[in-house]
Length: 158
Image 1 (tube, rainbow, N blue to C red):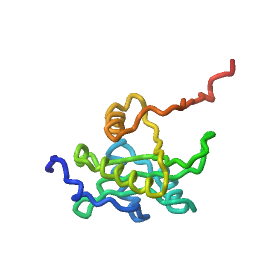
Image 2: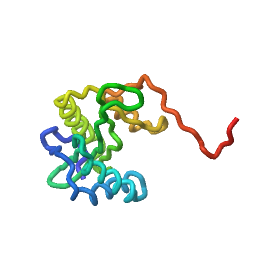
Image 3: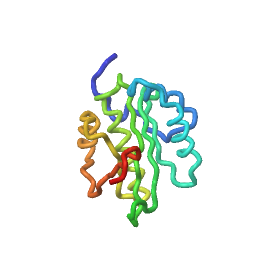
Image 4: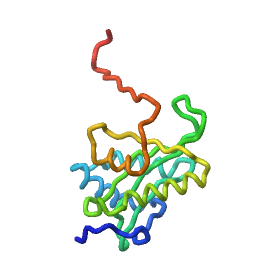
């Protein structure tokens, strides 16, 4: 397969549809090395049944789904008072990495959110996932002024 960068207009970015589920699960399985059917069943159910604003997207090239992102809008979470969008997952088919599919998805999401008056997009990434950290950095993401905390529930209290 040709691996040169695709022109932005060669990538069709559109709203996610329920019939995209199988392609999304397949792309994610190629990336993760395992299927996450239940994860996507729940996330897609949320994306299509929430009464809020639908902001999840799909990217197509030559009629085939080659990337996706699942996002949602929050109206004040974790003590914040202004609306913000949260991107739960982004995935690009491995054959299309480095060809601007992810950038096209983020660009369209940015345009859509700004049109809705939403100025903040949040996501999380493992600190050791350097490929994704680098991608997000190139898209303009920066460290958040918040501290994300985890509690290991199996550890005993001190």
